Picture (cartoon, rainbow, N blue to C red):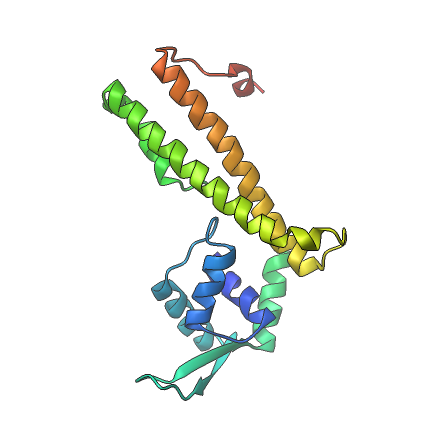
Length: 192
């Protein structure tokens, strides 16, 4: 459901083709809300049927003409209603966590190997977030960013902070398993 509104959000900024929408996702929100090309096109077709989006065909040197999508007034109203509505329930869906959940089925060496892979993955994500944020640091000197940029960058800030926390957790887990000390770091958190 959120993909529909993410697309409406991007289209509220400018008219885009499906390909351009995919690039927008990949450059900005893919770390917390990925979408593949087929999902985007399927959702665009539904948005057109619902009257929330329209498109104009543009001649293209390729076989098919390009469709440039733009949001309608009804689409803007739907987006505003969604943004002002209740927060979206967002359960964590993390494939690596479901794997960790079942790591007791692996021998210790394999557990450590897989956790090392997870640490490397998180370090890579942290580097990507840092790089993206650094590209916008010159704007930070203003101390008063335009709201659209501020809220976009705040999601990168969230990604960087949550990845840092995940990295601390994964490294600690690795160290505890390596030392054969299987205990929770802070059991008091479960009693609050």
